[in-house]
Length: 73
Image (tube, helix red, strand yellow):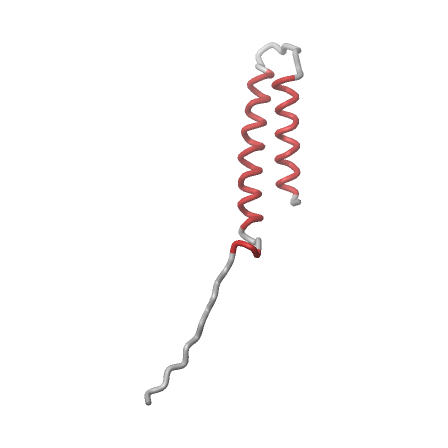
């Protein structure tokens, strides 16, 4: 797991805590909105991270090259 994947999971967790567990109010800041934004950014980062890791996966590549040698008879 790379740094980007771990950071994305931390953002998702922090966003979920702010959205669902924090009941405090701050003047001028909507804590729930900040939590949702963190979760969305974390999910987008996780998707990019997983797509990047999938590009190195060996199971998705099946390139079969068959070279035929033809001769004129």
